[in-house]
Image (cartoon, rainbow, N blue to C red; front, side, top):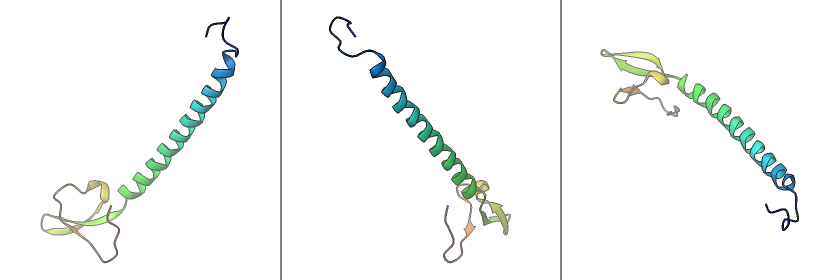
Length: 78
């Protein structure tokens, strides 16, 4: 900003910018918390997995790629 040419002060530009950035940060933080809660709910769901030839109940977070799982009709697939 060149004082001789600029017709507005620096704070009339900075204040709206800071407000927009603050609201954006608050919204992103809220979204992160909601995503964390949702992930915890999904990962805590129980599923039946074949381990050593028998069905075992496991948290969804412990299911690995290649595991054989038993699905029931209308069961949620994470």
